[in-house]
Length: 379
Length: 241
Ligand SMILES: Nc1ncnc2c1ncn2[C@@H]1O[C@H](COP(=O)(O)OP(=O)(O)OP(=O)(O)O)[C@@H](O)[C@H]1O
Ligand SMILES: [Mg+2]
Image 1 (cartoon, rainbow over the protein chains, first blue to last red):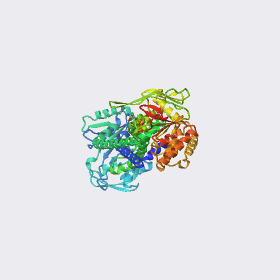
Image 2 (image 1 turned 45 degrees about the vertical axis):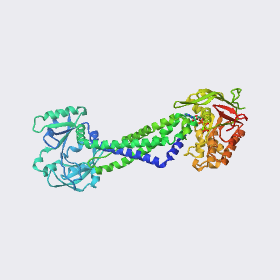
Image 3 (image 1 turned 180 degrees about the vertical axis):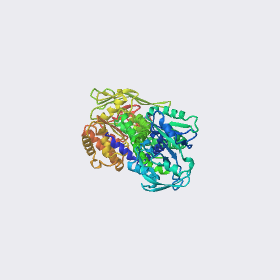
Image 4 (image 1 turned 90 degrees about the horizontal axis):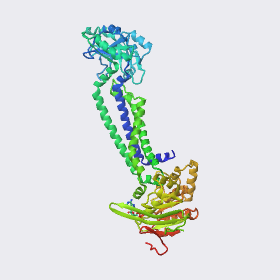
């Protein structure tokens, strides 16, 4: 690449314009990064769902409970390996807007059902030894500055009174996207302290099947088994469950994505236009290069490379900024975890490159087709 | 010997026969060159003169392989230029033609060195060899000390000297200059003509130059006038305008 210096000299030609063009690429790709992170936040549950797990809820609705006795009946079904259950607590920590999910979980089975969450044995044993114990996800603990040993008061909304828990362990995700904003405490404590009606009721069950390929079939068998009872069930693979949950939020997501996409493409059009102008201004110089015997292909490459270089620089800046800022998004939208997978970063830069090439292509082609005599007559 | 009668012997470096160039402007047809003949030998220095619009630039563009004639042929050192494909012509230009323009046409973002190096980037020369060539020609045009200046930091005369260095750095078969002093004051113009004269006399270059300036034309071996689409020799019989 003997012409590299010419390429860089061209970039320095109008420093302000080059900087602004790189800047608008950066903004567009920053936006892209945020959109990916937001999309991921809505659908992470779907992607992360265990293929070997089913969710069993009350047929009427998610908030209707199921009898605790279902646990043993589920375990007896062919192909079912393990069963656990949890209840929604719906409490408030300090302030309404400090939302995070609290689950009253079955201490004997919950941890084994979700191996994607890493908890030390020491921490888990301390949780098992304390009726008022609780476990918090790392993101949650960080958000409120909790440490193991802290006493955490949660005001019930469904269950009256202020409940105080001792933080016994903090779990982390084994994958970067894992949701560590959850709060777990013991179901036996909920039963003991809670009102009479909650006794003997589970919010939902999670079932692990031995063979993921039979998940759908077993889900049907579960619902058939409880049909025509007072508590009919609706069973779905965890993935489908997460997907229908995400769909409820779908409108918000659609709105964000639409606005974001429109802004993104507008920026690209503006950028493409700037590049076209930059090339047109240089018609005379390109004609000189052709006069000197520069082949058409070199001219094409030179213009395209310049455009691509601007795009990639901006793209890299943009996705890195998005990557840096995405963890901070969790503060604005608690309950979601925002994560930009490296593959999406690479895809973003690739996208910028593609746009840079497309934006540069028309000017590059016209530069290539330029008739030297006409161009020289103009200068 | 420079001839315009189409009867040159086989030794000419540049041989032009029956060159025709017509332009279409709307419904109007402009017949700029009408069966033009020319023979130029190695080491000749030819000046083309003629009123504005007589076709001098058109002729130079055809000679330099920048444009194609309506009919007729141009042969340079045995290669028929007018029979070459566009792609082949591009390579031919790089090897055989050095262009000098009225407006210098330097690349503003490159230094004098960078501008002169441009044609060499199309060759197989190593970086060190390129550097040596560039330094040699910049020294020849008297700008060794302005090597790292940008065009905007140079005077018009200096810019034109950089352009001349760029034209000769590949040691082309011949040089084409379109009003090389047209944009310069008298002193700079004299310096440039002095330089071009040295290129011809001391370095044996073949130069074909368009000029409006009789003083510049005086330095040439032959002054040819473009008149009604053909060249005529200025041996007194052709009126000077
Ligand atoms: N691309 C073109 N299309 C139409 N007409 C053209 C084109 N190029 C040149 N001409 C016409 O051909 C004629 C010769 O033009 P040319 O530029 O060769 O003249 P010239 O002798 O170089 O003039 P000057 O001294 O002003 O530079 C002019 O009438 C010009 O208008
Ligand atoms: Mg002209």
